[in-house]
Length: 447
Image 1 (spheres, one colour):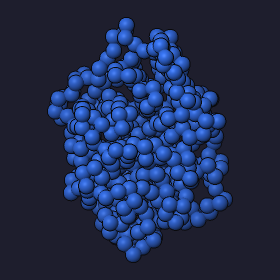
Image 2 (cartoon, rainbow, N blue to C red; image 1 turned 60 degrees about the horizontal axis):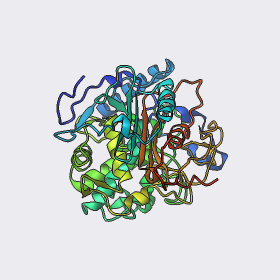
Image 3 (cartoon, rainbow, N blue to C red; image 1 turned 90 degrees about the horizontal axis):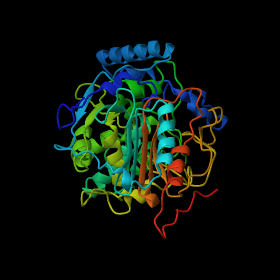
Image 4 (cartoon, rainbow, N blue to C red; image 1 turned 60 degrees about the vertical axis):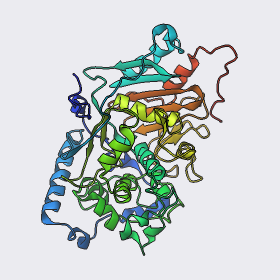
């Protein structure tokens, strides 16, 4: 299988996998989330007058989507397609990422083999390892190849932070602390006007958190499936906490980046993503879900790119916002992306950060109970500066600046019998690094 066009019209074979969990957190594993400390979450039903704001055709399409999703969920599946996909154009000419010769590998073959096998046994589509100037492993499984589109789930959330940084560098957005209401003008004069752009990236917007909803009238479903989902969030989605005071993971929070980018730049979200990110880093393009033809992109999820394109985004951050000799992100911006908050020291701007060691870490506020135990970390990371993109189904991209290393594992969720260990891949590979004379290992994650 080859790319059909250098502009990013790529093969979609990887979409054969179910889209369950493709940031379908509204109906997915968040089912068990409960919190007595946050009882106000219960008020999530959309008021009748809000429904009347939208056309009968929009409401009919929304109900069709909800019913289709319900049928799929009863079969243990998810959406089998996004009904409107918009192209995201990549670079005109794409050179494959540099692959190191076997004699120049810096990681022992035994470590690479163990990590590759862990990825293979856990339903991975692709496993890539970059260290110090080139790929040391690039493994694809089944019928996947380097051009196959990857259903990214929440790997799209770090992209929102990168695009905001790019817009700041271009002077389209003043800073992370600019009010979102400067662009979402419908929020002016309302409590939402205190939401900063920073809060939309670090999940401290104050908007209703993610949760389970089986009722079509529930705002969580309308904010995900409605053909005007951006307007639903702007006008109808409830503010629960004072902005900046509480971390609560929410797709709706990230979905507001697309309209901000469009209003700030005058470009469609897909076009800005392609022109200002993928093309400068030399990446193959893909597709993104828009809520209706010509409508708004989903920025909190639903971006489909090949695995090497995700790797190139990670390399941009590894190199502090520099690519091909050009600065794409403001100096120091990556540090802000990878710094946690007082409300959640493990989450920065769209990225998860090492912070202090915690054996189980999920996406939810740590006060939320009944949500299982979170993702296993069997031991501290061997590098304190590690950060990662982390999508539903254990889609992960680890970035370790001190080791000049990026590790990518993407694909369907691991088998239900597997307790995925988030520390296994990076630690196995770091233990296998053959260090030069005088080269020392980085400081590990603090306990």
